[in-house]
Length: 623
Image 1 (cartoon, one colour):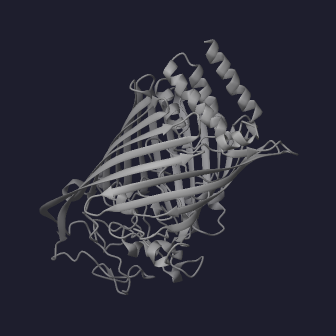
Image 2 (tube, one colour; image 1 turned 60 degrees about the horizontal axis):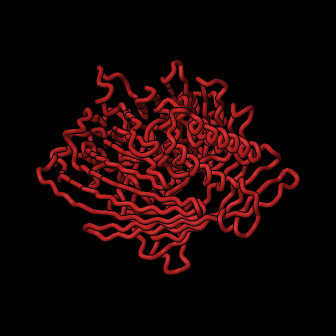
Image 3 (tube, one colour; image 1 turned 120 degrees about the vertical axis):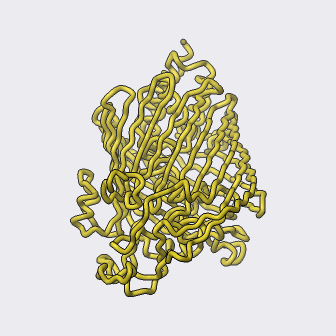
């Protein structure tokens, strides 16, 4: 017990001495969140907000509480001690400016001068993935980052970085819904021809840049947290969520969280979205990527979320979000505005989504959570709330259970359903755009990926994962995913009308476009089972981390075609007068948007299965 008291005092002292940078966010892929989540499940700490990332100050405080709890084992305390050691190193607590310390810590810290306290450092990581199957694949990511972190005037925390990427991109080495990259904008090349890196898979290495700047402050004893930056965010329960998912690409945004009471908090964010610069062969149609690269997707994003905990262990939340054209618009900047009403009086140009979720934590056992998100809700439709095609409702439910194997180990079981057309919105022609002359689309897409759960529309996923620390710097992550995709409303060979994860070809409205009710199970054409294992090793003597992983992907596909008796597609463009229809088809034609009412897909009887493996090896220094 004496050891616990000493460590707690040291932790408190380090917080007091270096509070100036404590408002900077802890990346959402940090093991700290698993430790915190497991401690919640075991009843060591009360339930925490589902709006992440947390600040360094908050995470260190929670780890201190977990460490000092009588419910924490000696092995778990050793894990926290090792974590805190690396945590403080990354914070810059060690002020020793000797060469040996600079080499060990990866940064240089000078004395505090006139309300300015800065450290300057660098870090490096590499991740290489090899794919084996029908196609050989090789994906290599290499990133060197220089950064400045510090405190200004004892009130603002800052982080500024400049990352140089040297990547060879190959999406075939991954499960496509897991594929992403860090480069911001487009890749360039100093080593070969530009033609080698214009679409995945690259045939050469391309160089690019990545940055995650952040300015943050915590006021009134952390009652109000403010952040302006480009960081990964995760707003909701579970492994990724339906609102703003941890899998989404970063974007610059201004956000704040107000937490005036332990049972209530409100979070608001407005940010600027980006375009896609990486067409991909095969699964993701290059034609769609060309569209995503255009000015059609010059959009902003706003989201607000209210969480309440009326009963101990029971938490509920409601959120609303909107994707809107880049312009000056006060309505979506007002944290007390209801987005749905605002977009109606503005002119119904924008794309609004709303949702709610809840969770119940049974101390010592686990947590159950569920969520839904409404992208479009037409009516009760005679009680067919979920089956009506005009009601676009995504669903998610899951359970987290703390397990005794390893340290801070937990098992997560989760199911997610993303309906047809989720996240999409109709496109306005340039002549219909009141804020410019280009076409305007407001799908829930940022830099080519979805802002919501990383799954194709009209798909369902069942997931089981296990995460734990094994001691001596080792962690283990196991995951099994089964993804099922339907072709009921499909209008292309990929089983849906989407490109790059999200369907930006909208559901078509009007009396001429009569969609039949959803029948997901009758039109399943693709089932993918992914099994993966990742082991990571961190060294306490030196800030090095190694990781290696193995993944097996079993991809089963069923043939399907379209009933020739049903005209399952129409070539047309939007017309000013929606009544100008002949047999449900606009008179003016030109664009190639397609229409399948949902009863024109004929399923075949032939199935084919392919198996591929992926091996990944990674190394990081000073992370």
